[in-house]
Image (cartoon, rainbow, N blue to C red; front, side):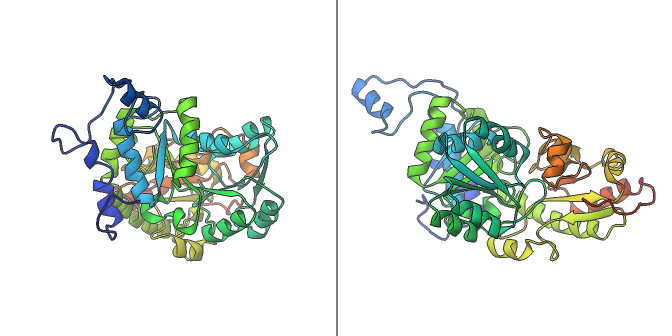
Length: 405
C-alpha cells in the first residue's frame, strides 16, 4: 500500500514526498506538467497491453495522465488507501461515485447537513432517476440505523458538515451500514487527511473536494476519491468514459499546494480554535459552531476520531442577516467568496456559499438560517485575525435579542 520503506513516516512527510519520485523527468526535483493528450507507441503489442491495462502506461488524457497520477498517489498515501482516482471538481467526485454504484430502484441514506451541491443531488437529481433518498437528522443515530435497516445501497456521510460543522460517529455508522450490506462514503473535505482518516474506521470510499484544503491556494479545481482498489477501479471506469477528468495543470498546482498541507492545516486549526473561543464570548454573536469547543454536541466524537478540530467553523449573529450585511464588508483580512481551505481567510453566509443553489425555504428546512456565516481560517497571524474581527464587529449597533433558528 505504501511507497515508503519506513512504515512510521508521518503525514507531514508524506505531504512533501508521496507520489512524486517515479514521475520526475530529466533529473528534475519536481513533477512536471504533462500536457500531452495522447501517448505514442512504436510497438503495437505494447500499445495494446497498455490500452487494456495489462502494462503500466498512458494512452489518452481522458483516461490517465502522469501529473494527475502523481497527485492521486499523494492523496492515496495520506489517506492510507489502496487506490485513488481524481476528477475535474469535488462535485464530479461525488456525482461520479454515486452514479457508479446506484441503479433505478436503489436507495441512499444520508444526513440533512451536507454541502448544498450534494444536497441537490439527493433532493433533485437522484429522485429523477428513480433512486430513493432518505435524509436523516444529523447525529440522530437511531433514525439513521432505522432507515439503513429498511435497505439501502449507500450510506453517505459528511463529517464535519458544511457549513454547520456537525460531527458524525464514523465507526458506529460504518457498522450500521455494513451490517445492512451498504457501502459507506464519507466526504472528508473539512477534516482533511491530516486531521481524519475515515478508511481507518472501515469506510469504503473517502471523498475530497481537492479545490479546498488539499490545493490550498484557491487557484485550481479538482476532486479525488480513495478506497479499495476494487471500488476505485469501478469509479475510475465510470469517470474515464463520462469524462470528468482532472486537468494536468490543476494536478500540478495540487501537488505543489499539498507540500505545505500539514503546515497550513496546523495553523488553520490553531486559529479556528482561538477565534471560535473569542466569538463565543462576544456580545454580538448568538452561537458558534466548532467541534473544538467543549459545548459542541459532537465534541467528544470529534476528539476521538479527529487529530485536530479543523480550520472551519460557523456562527450566527444576534442582529440576523442585517448584521451580517453590515459586518462582513468591514473585514479587511478575509475574502468574501464562495470558497474555503485557502491560505487566505475566506468568509461568507451559507446563502451565497455552500447552499447558494438552495432556496431560502430549502435552507430553512435544512436548519441553515440566512444569517449563518461560514468562516475558513487562513494562515495569517491569529491575533491579526481576531483584531480584524473586533474592529468589524465594532461597527454594529447594540445587539438586539438573539434570533434563534
